[in-house]
Image 1 (cartoon, rainbow, N blue to C red):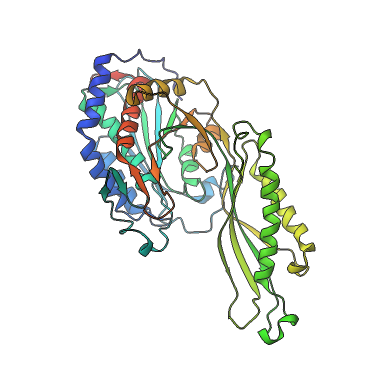
Image 2: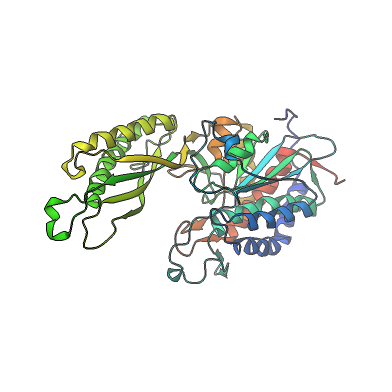
Length: 434
């Protein structure tokens, strides 16, 4: 990281010019975001959207870095999430701006390009890849989570250039993969050597700053049965019934951990911060055969301060002990960890980066910045825990992320872009363009 001194405060003229510049380019920003949403950047299919962003960054004159993630490069790191898919198309893209002379503090502007599956597309109002703008919202899978944020990072920089300024410190514009499943994209960027004096990640966070969030584990549970014809069900053993018994055992761990919320800073006020989601279940081979197998996939949350290994040990023990339930037939479930293996984090208060964001938010929104705790995963844990960088997760209002008709609020996005532009100016300092 760099150790440049803090630049002087922005003048009212500089602030006004930057805010106007965001407005002047906002239609172009929305069109760019729509173009980005049209790429179906699902897991294992992110490369075409990354090519689009690579070219957009290259045209801005950034020094470009694009690489395919090699699992062997990151596998031994404690923040690594187990991989069950091909990384053939798992490319990270980083564009770096560097001034001729550094006068301010460096910055990472990070975002993820991967999006979650759409679910049945007939349940959307229109195609999830058709980013319509209706009544002040942009629709589409990934519009909010988080392609609008990726575009905001670039157009916040553009606003400074349009206003006649250049940042006075290095800025790394990162578009990473795997945020929705392992966090390995952000981890690979950190291990490639990218560090800075602060990080901003404009995830859709309702115009607020994330103070803390949970860690997450993904795992698959498989239970065995004994098949028979249904006319002789009593002689068989139903694996799907056994799966219900294993799920009930996991629910007891979930309830136990939620009962401890008052012991965890920033989670005391949440009644149910720990969610175990049974996200997928499959089993059996034939309606008239007692099912010989069943598998289900779980996303389990953990508190900051609990390591992934500690949580895994308790989950594994719970499922071993569940074998006493007769529905499991005396055979313990098999558990395989399949993705996220991530700790949670807390953003400590009072950093220069947070204070700067508060000032910039106040100037853009004409209101005070609020913070909150989220029971979701964020890549910020990579930068906070393993990079020791103050990381500000802060972004626009949204509705139905991970659901049908996902959308981002455009006026919120405009103001978030203004905040980021002012943050770049204040944190990195301003110079005359080269």
